[in-house]
Image (cartoon, rainbow, N blue to C red; front, side, top):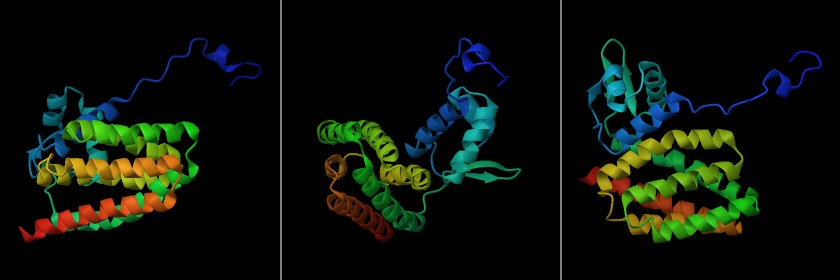
Length: 227
């Protein structure tokens, strides 16, 4: 800033920063992978992905790098890209990690949420119970809002970032094996219970609710090894 100048003088008509195209590319590609429209094991190129979602190579490349860090895309030098196969044993290791992180962020959210955030969690609990059990896609939309609310309330960006990198693999696994609807009511109720516990600041109830959800996921995953 020049001496004596205000921000308004330097930029008299500021405009909001536009959303990065790489974020759009990431969300679209992640959705395609999680919902299996891009099937596990499929070989693709950056150009094919760019054409599929209608965005340029640069934002797609940035999205691919992010998805590779989340174990959803394998980058094979000089051979292209591969949508990561589903690995049940890897999923069990993921659940071990998620268990610790989910308890941490949800407990902190229960302790640290302000009045407005608690009202949001009450609303989310109702949404899980009313709309979340009706269809998988509705559940996913509510779950995304829930994850964002927990991230904001827990006030620990390191735990949030670590946990966020695991959500794509988790959702894809459940999407693939659960058939979307069979256990949806149960899963929606588990999420509603945790959201409600965060809303009232009950850390013990939050821990019990998250643990019950992780136990369900672990049992469900172990059952796949027997098939």
